Image (tube, rainbow, N blue to C red; front, side, top):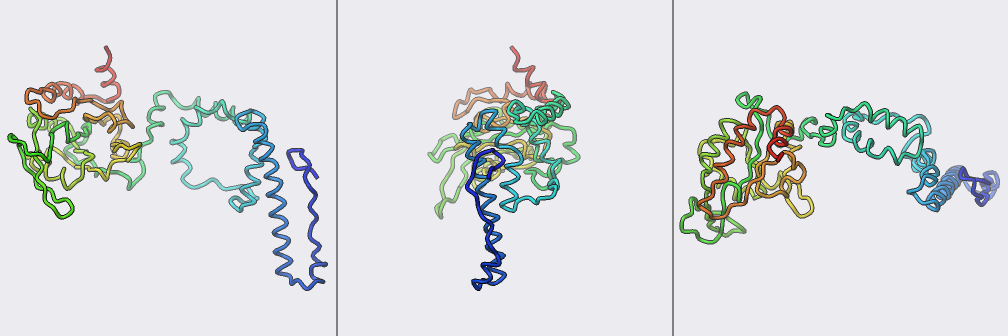
Length: 329
């Protein structure tokens, strides 16, 4: 007996149902025995195919051909995951097509079939180069109910959204007493109230006032809300920030709290982030305006120097193009 791989296998005899009945087995037991025999035979054949595929090496062309679509369907059908009839396409396929199209285009060289290779090439050729970035940066705002931000207000329609960090970007805070602290915020931690001393970065008031005139401003910090919320209340007296996002809105990635801009619900081509920590915008470095960390240098002019830069960016139709021009030597 040969499996589809051409390798010999041990012959398995079909159970003799009449003989089993003569031994006193009822019809339910006989049916179960038949099902078990069918299941075992198909699994053994699939395992022989899989072993043969591994022996060639799954990275080789021969190995990929042996691990064919028929074998995969055989295993899945044996486990009851697909029916023998033509499988229906899953619902919502078009949603995920945009997510995987670029990934598939990058891996067409690994296709195990010339037909699949031609199909992948044809599909890749239909994707304009200008759409590749948008395809790779699949935006969650296209799926209802997954946005971190509410709908854009009428006042902010057409404006660029600027995500602004708090600690070491606008302020510096410490549990140690600071003589010239601008704010002293009581924070309760595990039943004990602690005093947090907050220093405002030079020109922060002028910076926030101008940003509120030009952009839709969002505070996004990796700090806990119990600390950041009262600090922002004291810092943002004019109500510049349309929304506030805290640690729970971050994505914990490789030990860092990352601010995933694709979850905001805004067009990434119209979104900027101002942050002193590159790890915070590791998912979207092309949207970032870096800023030096600040602790206590009262001669610092970083925020003042950033105002004309943001004034220029406020009229951009595509922040990638505008930031690329600013970064160019």
